[in-house]
Structures are given as C-alpha cells and as structure tokens.
Length: 126
Image (cartoon, rainbow, N blue to C red; front, side, top):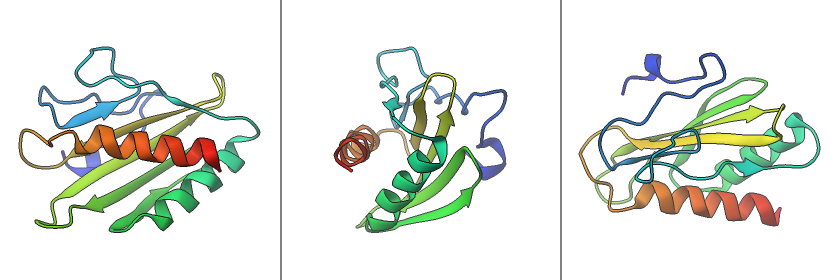
C-alpha cells in the first residue's frame, strides 16, 4: 500500500487487504482484528509514550506524526522488508487504534501481530 493511502480518514485507518500480513484494531474479522490499546491521561501523554516505545525499537523510524496520529516504518532484519505501522488516538473512547501491515508479500508469519502485542505490552508497562 502506498503511503498516500495511509492515514486517518473520518476516524478510520485504512482497512487491511485480503492477505494475512496485516492486523488492525479497527478490523472486525478474526484474521486481522486485535483489540485497541486503552490509555489513561491525555492524548498528548499517550502519543509521547508511543513515540518513546517506537524510538526504542530497533529498525523502526517515525516518518509522520500529528496531534493524534503517528506513522512509523519498521524494516525486517534479514531481507529489509518495510512494514507500515500506524496509530490513531481516539479521545472519545480513550483508546489507541492501530494498523500494522507488510508492504509486500502475502504472509508475514505472524510478525505484525507479534509486533503489536509487544508494543501494547510496553505501553501498558510504561
């Protein structure tokens, strides 16, 4: 997916494609869906926490950020494949919606789901 198709449109991140290499907290199907990250405090504090977590991850670069949105790219260790990771802070529900997807290929061997579980865990610890 090109970066022009990413981002938040009317409170929604882009839907996952019909491939098993994407997870999203806004997806309702079992294959792609995950629960969003809940937060306490302000959206600014949640965003700052996320930025710290992403900055500390190896091979991850933040490429875009706004007041309620962050987009990062993470490269795979061996083949340097790029995955797009997005976070959208929904202040109404005090939750952080996310989408993590491989740019190329079909299967990701569970990498995107594992990554989001790691980030979720880090966020809840911080």
